[in-house]
Length: 198
Length: 198
Image (cartoon, rainbow over the protein chains, first blue to last red):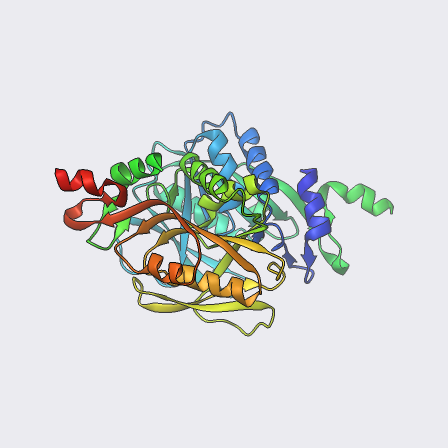
């Protein structure tokens, strides 16, 4: 998605070879027009997948999911992140390890909102090591529902996430795929040939 | 807002005289069409207020702010909640006490996104004791920016929040004002006469 890539180029901040900060338009301040277009693009890509629910994770997944949920007429569920869980029988729980924060969080979804009839589109802001996505997939599977696919705003293609999810046989649509953040420069996967010729 | 009140009546769950659970359409599962209409209503109410930024708080404030941000063409910022803050000079911080959770959280907003030029519309899902709203107001004031007003989805009018904010001289627009949750029944402020006649 060219407009998203342009925002990453001009407003993203490469903090290291692994870390891209996008809090000017996605993670803290939100460019709602751009995130609306992102959501519309997810809806277009999955329009034939008979989606009944959209599942994301708080907080940064909510804005890019909003218009997808509106266009696909499928309710949006955001999983909750908690450091420690109080006992509650009515939730699906999955453990998600964050490499960045070096901590494990429980993510939870109420059993009221996912059933075995559901076809679920999972949306998240980033795909890196895939731990959050795998946690969301785990929750959909616990519900006996179908993972119809994953929509990712920004994929760090130099990390393992896509491989781990493709091994499970699921479709992933990433709107911006980053090949490298080396030398403070963002290189996208689909620019590789051009970049190598420079 | 009649449609919102109807959702509260039919899909809300009164857990006690103080607690209304709305996780079927606002706090966990999101009715994006309804929250879109909520955002449009905030935009209509504040269309002449020259809003330059919308400030909310993760996670439940994001969905009701989305269309307000789009219609007012003002970027959306969501404050981050953290249990303990790592030192960071580049954020505004305010302490917010939660009566429900009986804990104090720091809420933070990057100094990059609010300036003294800004006219800020604060949006939140609930107004009860007003602690979250006062924390957001505090952050806007720290930035030297102007609080143009507050847009609240659901106000528990039997608690102190509105009074505390009106004492500071700010405009509040609440789309549903709840007079009472007594006996498991939701009574709205604008239904009082009718209800008393029943």
